Image 1 (cartoon, rainbow, N blue to C red):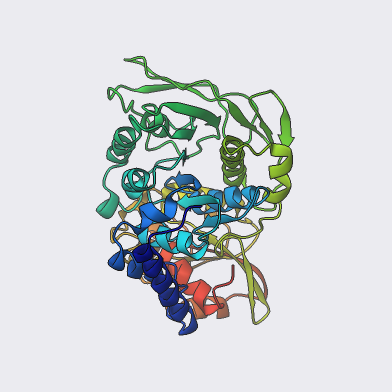
Image 2: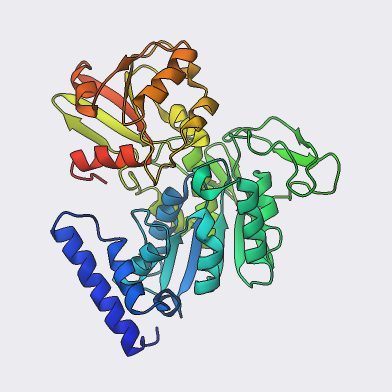
Length: 418
């Protein structure tokens, strides 16, 4: 990599110092403050830090932190990789990640959906990975159709190689202006945001019946225009991924659930664009057991609690899929800035799957969730705090599902286990 200009070197060094102080004083993990300091001193720092690296940007509504981790883990087979491992996915977090690993020839950055156009324009990333789009933080991010439209405009005229999930019509539409696209059939279990054609507004017809993890194909096409699902280059088929050469690769991940198999299929297609063969990548994917606290099991007073993150309706669907129906469950919901202030999305989640389980409700917006469960005829116990919920449960295993800031609060109680 080329030497940074002196001003950028100074900004980067002071940013790293700020990040170190933040961690040392227990004020945070430093993944944002360091970048903010660096950008104050050198507004063009992200562009300079990204220069001369082989860089991938990863964006989606759900699964981008996990997929970023999987891609970065696989690429370590080729050399040092700079990445924002803890999900600080806006420019300040990107600066911190690149500054902290300033000599890494490779970089994988998770990017907030709304910031993708800006970050792509700044970094000139060679690879862009797009996975899914669904309703999330609508008071901040607006309608997902508008996000897909921003992606289209950002990718038009750029030389970036796009890796995109062709089973999601909005992602397909957002990626279709790119100069080069590798299509991955990663599945789409949550379809409530993509019944209409993003090109013309007509109804989408869906053929076949494959959900993620079942053999076959998911075909969709607009009834009123030519917009349709492209033929995939990579296909998730149960526990296997089929590559463009027809080779079948067994995943055997330690991360649970169909959504993570989809994440892994997209990760394999992405690292292939870096020149890394699946035979070398898959063993590294299998080493990932937890991602920024997700899927971690923590213990307290004889209770083993597995932590699951769910921050929107599509995310809750995936969390329920990996949750153990035999276990009691704690649900925790906040509505702080990073969560979105509007909790009306709770009404889009089908909580009937919880029937028959002991359910404990906590979090700052526990009354909102309690009303939703009551309407769904789900018995529950309302708790003033997470500790109260834990104390009310018998010894043994427990599942915990929390949205973003509630999840982080729980992680902090356990020393931010990762």
